[in-house]
Length: 579
Ligand SMILES: Cc1ncc(C[n+]2csc(CCOP(=O)(O)OP(=O)(O)O)c2C)c(N)n1
Ligand SMILES: [Mg+2]
Image 1 (cartoon, rainbow, N blue to C red):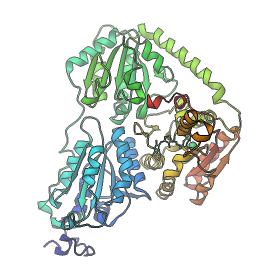
Image 2 (tube, protein in one colour; image 1 turned 90 degrees about the vertical axis):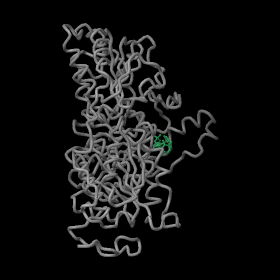
Image 3 (spheres, protein in one colour; image 1 turned 180 degrees about the horizontal axis):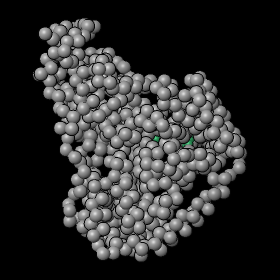
Image 4 (cartoon, protein in one colour; image 1 turned 30 degrees about the vertical axis):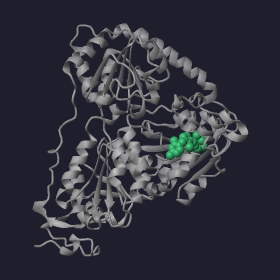
């Protein structure tokens, strides 16, 4: 049978699909390639350019989650990649569909999250003619992706998706972008002329250990270390190397610190879990291993780590190793594979020195307790308006082993990081180095869709909540309800602090004031429960009620907690993010 000629051009966009077994369209090739890559869900907002992809997804059994704003679609694809360890996928239409998604793609770029963004474009037959929603998408996406390209022929659609997927997983993970013109998607070609890479046959393993001699060297350094500390960052969980990190810490008795997506790989209370003593350990340790996190602003560009210590850096990206400060030993490769190989190398030694390091760990443990003690008066504060530290403390008390915690806001979220200690791997999600407000709703729906058996909580600032909250409806619609807590200080407070301090009360309170919004009613509008909380002793009962209402109604709940706008995080006061 012949391909339907009408669907080969942009002239008849309503020509009925032929449904012939002998031909396949570009949109169906997209879906086939996504399936081969293990993608079971796409996040999207519709547009005329991309509808054939949906038709393909129906055939392949790929779930279509249609949101209300493309930023949320991109954050959700990022969140889904983080939660599943697989390629995330966002599909947007041309022009504003793409620009709306850019914040989410940029966030994934700085967070090294593997997602594929497929964007629509007007037909090749209308190239540069001034068509609807035409923009230079590939040029725009190139600086914020690892790979960005147009797809020029239907025959190559599936092939180019496999190419983009490979790019997402080389070195440090990250996003790719493919622009596919409408006529390339619509066109039907004989099946045998399409290039369709087979599942499992177009990608090599990325579990490389780097230079084997360096594995021996690192094993040697760790076995001889007296006061070792290891920091595992986002790459370790993202590449699912966290068990290897835990095994190494346990076998060699190394103090383990976690940040970003790796928070939660060990629960608080574990003998190797350390949290509050990182800067002190980085000053006193003799051997420090940094795994899968760069020396960026969050690490003071490496300045705060002792110059006397032997400093080892392991990263998926060769370009990150040794960047911003000198190191003693660098290894580029897969974090889990490297740490497992190091442990194996160390296991061969007659004495791995574990016992000798117990005193060092006990010392750090005592320091941790002291630091917690100092924070307790704020955590248990009964003051009114509610102290934001009290809110953070109550949230931490509320978490179960199966609660995924998401932070989306300014100062309120910075504060929460001091109290909230997730209890399991994957149970912490933050925007990462781009510091993007508005990630919460997309992350929350993605977490719920990836793990329906888990509970999802998102702590928002009132500024952040306003950015993306409407997609709470999408989360409800697809059966992924969550608990939203708004730390409401009626301001963009994290920025306000610097303004008021620098310019005084009068000139500093400019451009940062939000209205007093009772966000609880927002949840009610969408069929869920809303609560307004002004008494600190009401926070815990409110959380419990929200848990029950999400379970019984299947709709998200909002707890709007009115917090004191005049309390700030120490990091905000010291403006450490700019130093
Ligand atoms: C998309 C985006 N816009 C602006 C900023 C700059 N910014 C950082 S913190 C902050 C205030 C956020 O206010 P809110 O969410 O209410 O949290 P609060 O600081 O008040 O606790 C702003 C505007 C940002 N990080 N991201
Ligand atoms: Mg605020």
